[in-house]
Length: 240
Ligand SMILES: [Zn+2]
Ligand SMILES: [Zn+2]
Image (cartoon, rainbow, N blue to C red; front, side, top):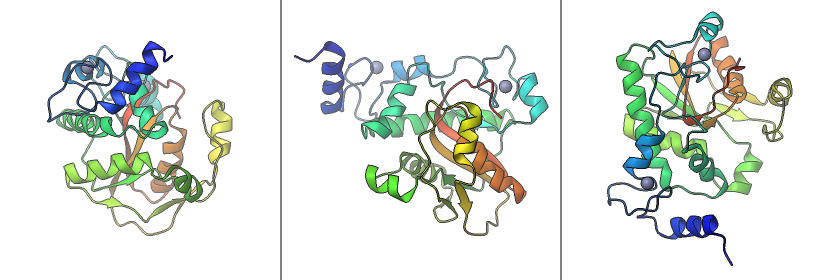
C-alpha cells in the first residue's frame, strides 16, 4: 500500500499536466510547477548574491560578502523554500518537467539583477561537468540540461569542450567545508583557451558553493570574470 506522499509523487510523475507541488491541473504552456506554487517559492525579499542571506536593502552583497568580494550566484529561489526538492529530483529521478519553468524563473531573476546593475550578461556559459564515468552511469548531466536550455533562450553560446572533470570525486554531501575543498582539489581542468572576458558557470543547485568556486578559480587565474547561475541555492553564510 502506497503512502499518501509517494502516491502523490507517483501521480505527479504520470500526470505531467498537473503541478508537482499542489497537483492542480496546469495549462499546456507550463509544465512541472504551476504559477501559484512557483511564485510562492521564489525570492520575495532582496538576497545577498554572495551567500544567499535575506537582506533588508536591495544591494548586491551583505557586508561580509562585500569584504571578501565573493562569487556572485544568480538563483531564482532558495533551496529550502520549496522548489529545491524538485530541482534535486532532476538528478535523482530524472524529473525533467521542472527544468523549463525553473529556467524561465532564473532568466527573469537574471534580467532583474542586470537592470539593478548587480550583474552583467556574460558572453558565454559553461555547465559544471560530470566525470565521464558518472555521466555514463546517470546518462545525463543535469547541469548541462539546464545550461542548454539557458543557452537557447538567451542565445548565448554554451562552451562544451573547455572544462573537464578529471577526477571522479566522492559526493560532496556530508563533508565539512575543508573536506569539500580537499575533495575537489584539482578535480577540474581547463583544456582549451578561452577568448572571452565574462562567463557564467551553470549548475542545477549550489549548496556551499565549493564546486563552482573551484571552477571560478581556474577562470579567474586567466582574468576571466565569472558568475554562477543555478536553479536553487542554499543559504551558505560560510561560503568562500
Ligand atoms: Zn501548484
Ligand atoms: Zn552575503
